[in-house]
Length: 358
Image: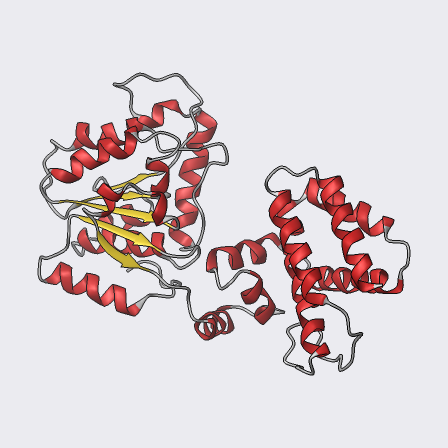
């Protein structure tokens, strides 16, 4: 019906189907697990199943995210002043509303597409109040399904939205279901978790990901990309759609390690890395991960393990402590995203690595 391009978790989907057929679907469900495992798409697919009446007009509404029974709740920014009686979407500017519509359309085409606003830090309590306001409407067919993306933001930075939802879950409206989606289950109130049926979506098997892309498109360096993204389909698609030149980043990573080993002037590489971080953090993230994989390959080769991801043709290297360089790169990467000054952080990383690799 929808999402032919989704890697379905067969175990969970068969459980959900059986619950629907036997009319034993719990009114509240928690879909959790790593990023990029298809949690959101499975929730939308379930909502569509609950509202499938074999009418083409209803299917079109579902595919356009316009079905009245399917309500998407997600963190949105406060761009306009609203009061307690306002609908949540009233706080969005006209431009953001248009952007939301476009994101929903894209989501129905690509199951791993992310609907999000960069400046949204929480789910507004008005979004939960909207559920109560609309709960008195009669449902002729199907079921009302509220899908809550980034459900951990019900409770951060304030817990009011989470507490408001909890009251609804304690006495849910008739023929209404809630699907909470998160990659951070530990940030959700325990009282909410206790009222939800738990569905864990594990990391997708690497071979399934390979089969998926081999059937649908030809991707260079697929093994490397799977490892870089830890098998997250969401991140894989982000890299593919951004058209990042992975081959160039691999060569850049090799070159910078070579320069440090030869004790050559590394200032040019430092300036390039600093500029990359400031101008395109996503590409910088991919570069650092590739750098770590190159160092990991060197550590393997040093120990006569030639099962390498990038340096497949190299059979010999210097007996250096590449593992320490990996720790330096990982620590730098983490600190840069904690507001460490990029000029200081990147320079410090290269200086420390140079001492080990020279």
